[in-house]
Image (cartoon, rainbow, N blue to C red; front, side, top):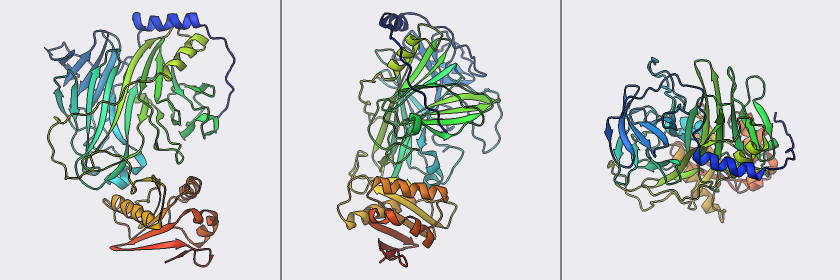
Length: 504
């Protein structure tokens, strides 16, 4: 399914590389040739603090941020960034037709950049809605405020399903990066486990580059989350760099377990890079312990042709009164040539992808619009002995749910395993009551992954005696099975007897 190539040997022209880096800092770029369907900007109306001005964008009140060289436009009514590029230059971001009419219940895909919760396949279980995205975070007007420190802040509504809101702060830093600080703040309800997922839609570029982990667990060091509808978009691959193309008429999605959280799209010699500080942890969508901090979606629909550059934070448990944070930096870089096969160009791209942000995520201050959270002693999302990795989520379409978890802290006792299972039960029954819910607690990654692979093939259906027999080798790594029937709960322990795999 994936095609391995060896990294070609080439001599790096350091003189040309240094010249190109200087050029990136001093020269105006070539135009991002693709112009978007929408996104007209009226003259700036009012100057505010820190390079922020009020303006109009396609009929919406908006804020323009600039450092004099680059600019970004945030539209609070749409809850997103709608423009980013050189001052007076084309928009790097894809915008939909501003005159497009949507039907009731349609996903209003305006384009631009926004924040979603991840992973997507948990939405139905945690919020009761699989698609479209939660309206509190996607499509509902957000409150906006220019802060005394010269930053723009937007605040979403509180999601009914997640009990949390998204706070975004925007500014240009001293290096010229456009910074988007994303925070999920939990205000009410049961704990939830989620990742912050930045979704940045760009007009189709000439090429997209993703960093690869040479020690990746995946064949060819990346994974097809969704395989292409037709021919492979892979242009060139080395152990540390993947180049793909945007493909019309086809959709595909790629995930990489890179140790650098960055992605680059190139158009006419101009490289647009999005990056975040890399954090150790469990990321969504991949194998256990090998999820994806970087993902790419290709949307080849003729009516909405774009690419999504996606950066994700590690999965964390979000409790009432706590926050999780993910800070993204955008930057534009003029490459020395438009020829993307040139060794100097590829060397600069790979160097950019490995650039560290060298910045701790800033703390969100307390002067956001007030919503009183339920009192709780915990103020951070640090792991405790009840936190867990979700291995298999219960299928919400079934009356009997089967899920598997693995505690983040090493299991020291059966009592701890039961405590973790009870916490998982509380979290996952907040929006759905199964007739029966089985929670298998694992203490070994390999065994947990085997269970996940098996259940994926069987669409999460309850295990039968033949299934227990197929999985006989992993039960020694599952200290308990926690069972919930209505208000009753029970704990079972693995048995070696093939007639009764679990005993009370």
